Length: 296
Length: 272
Ligand SMILES: Nc1ncnc2c1ncn2[C@@H]1O[C@H](COP(=O)(O)OP(=O)(O)OP(=O)(O)O)[C@@H](O)[C@H]1O
Ligand SMILES: [Mg+2]
Image (cartoon, rainbow over all chains, first blue to last red; front, side, top):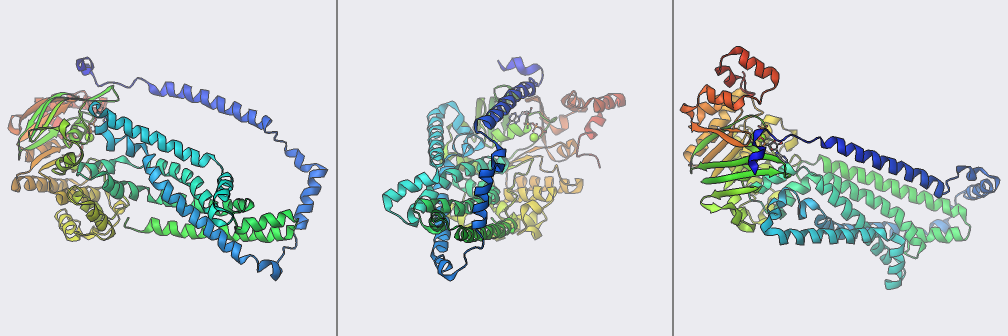
């Protein structure tokens, strides 16, 4: 049977052509969807310029000045600020703890394809292969469930379960961000150069040591970058969680808005801005040290 | 050491890389594989080091059928086979010392591997291996900062740290200068001679193959074109091996010269 091939090296049968037709169809579909959404989502920028809208925006903006810097108000904010930082930090930490192992299981090149699994693909180990693929699909489903449900819905549920305060917020961020981290981790790990993994495998290294010596060192900068970015997002998310009673700056923000104290809102937004910027600076620093460190 | 019987490797059910290959390699033997680009040399090595399974055929390693290996047993067998890859396949962000010591991963328990990543446990072993290939000063350098030829030598040092029974060297001298190339080939030859290690080497340099190996195998289109003692390989054999695989210009040149020995010297990496 193989003799049929033996006249010349098998040539490629122009797969590029078929691919590009496929791409054209998808591009057209995408453009149609985009135009359709523009209409259906009722995007009418002019609405912003109508007198009614203009007047409301004006009232809101002028109401914010001057920001409320009175000691009575500012002295109230120490606790919420600390709470917000703790909440975002613990939430992100929990997301990493849950998301990382799930991310490993959701990585194709670890579970059932690629060089690390070449031997499992052989017919005699079919059942092992199917079991692995099943695990992979299940974990992916769990991860997407985690992130489909919005943070504040999770928070709402956890507030019911464990009561008001930062803890339900931690749980909410932990779970929903685990879904995002797990997915992105798995994508980062899948795009690592497989060559070094193959050479480690060839020395007789186990899967775990290949992970430690080949996969993680190659993926580390991206993994860390993305995790730090998620921490930044968690600070923002924690404000929304405050609205459903998860404490922190968000809760204060909700109170001030409800009371139409727009000058307090400005103070709070400024504080949030400083916090997010601070995390940004900090994560840039961490990223730089990790990138320049020569070991691991 | 190896007995291959009717080995085929087909990628994606259409690219035939190796076809119906029969091969016997004895313990301690030194064999050079030569052949045009795309002949299947790398693919053959990946089957020989048990990372990819053949599509069909049987591969016996040390008398045992490779299909029966799995899990821990498979890893123990892989440990006995060391590979130097054409693309070096080092982990770029790790320090050289970790890349060299990763040759030990097959024999170390996991805790040992973790410990070494934090603080190299056998740094002196790594240093010794690097000294052999002449780059001892790079021990704590980050691997990606090294030149191509230096990385190739790190890969060889990793093999020295692994200390396998079989050495598969896929173009081990493709990115170093000719003088160093000869030195590295000699190093591997000496290693196999003094410790009776089996050595298989892919070479694009036919001269090096003739100079150092008693047995030459020509591989073309996934099959063996000749398998002879070095003394019995003639220019006709080489011409047949490389004909049709050159770019048109080179091919024309070969025939216009009408001097078969030219074929030998027009292989890449060979010209001084
Ligand atoms: N992973 C793969 N998937 C698909 N095809 C492959 C794969 N690896 C190799 N091939 C094909 O198999 C054939 C042999 O490749 P191989 O790398 O073994 O050649 P080689 O003799 O090592 O060439 P070179 O001297 O250029 O390194 C080529 O046609 C190549 O395209
Ligand atoms: Mg090759």
